[in-house]
Image 1 (cartoon, one colour):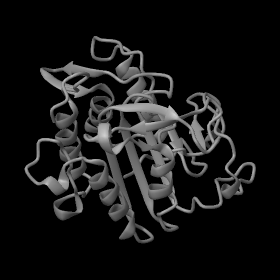
Image 2 (cartoon, rainbow, N blue to C red; image 1 turned 90 degrees about the vertical axis):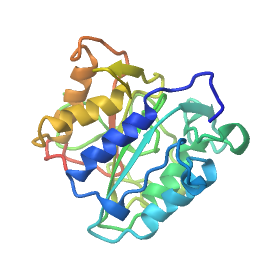
Image 3 (cartoon, one colour; image 1 turned 120 degrees about the horizontal axis):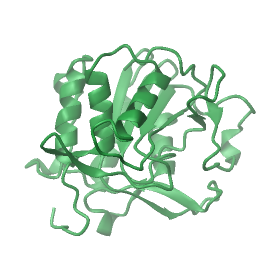
Image 4 (cartoon, rainbow, N blue to C red; image 1 turned 180 degrees about the vertical axis):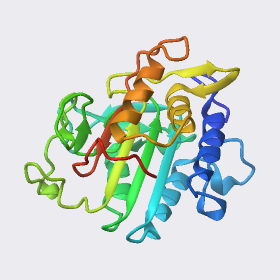
Length: 261
């Protein structure tokens, strides 16, 4: 696109690298949709309208037992919360390529589409490589490595106010979250993610860490994968990044169970 200020160099490489990784897990052919701003097909440009359409399409055809994956590499930001569900008054967002005119996509929208829209028995793994992405899907549970216990802990870095429509019961996921949704985010809500240059290629640091860790073997637990990513970003490639990847979920999970897509 025409925007040059703050332009990210590694996003398209991230998409290509993630697509290549996903083929190893059976995500191939027409089951994979790619949206980048260098495509000739205007319907697959990552505009807000196109992104919202494809997000809805992703969950519309989901059935119990299906495994879905959502990856975003790009700019993330924060905007003023208008419905009162954020203790700090800010919603987390992702930016489509036409955000200047069409607006940003807020975490409430991602929750409504990708979490509430999934049927029971379906599973979605999401990866958000962008700034301010820690609670980027408004999931009610976050795993704290080394915190002990066999399930996710409630949010403590940035607490979400209870939504009246959620009918949240202490210790359980919200009543409208029937599917298993897990988000690996590139950083905390108060942090930025690095647009890096690693091994001769521009890349988002978080996408690189995720694909690198999985590329070295698939015998990870959820906790192990998160910790491996954090270690890699904290000096594992000779450079240290301040961002701290997060793991959140729609329902309590056992962080010691094997990671799966």
